[in-house]
Length: 117
Image (cartoon, rainbow, N blue to C red; front, side, top):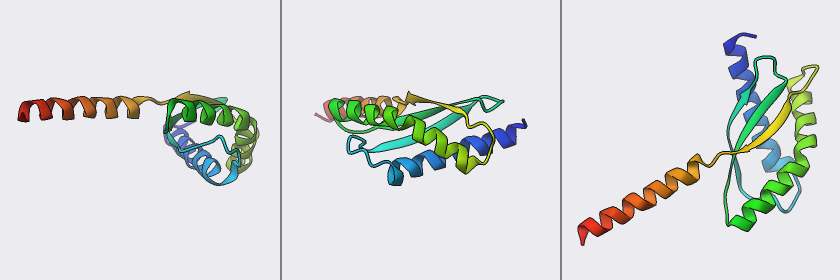
């Protein structure tokens, strides 16, 4: 599979999973989620879906449980929407880079306040 096609498929999966989380999943446990990126294997057998979860620790845990429960539905829908014979096995991964950058920004802000005083 060409690199360009792989990138298009990854972007398509990212957009479709985002749409599903926003509109199709009715699980009340699922809070605010952002699909940050998708990494698929060259043969499209597997795709890692990286997610950023927002809220308290408890809210994030509930959201994660709701997403895990919906994984079969999401995979089936991705297969239908992609129109390929075998839909990839989806693996959910937490993307904590956003949390990390927010933490760094907080530390930088705190340092600046201390300097100003």
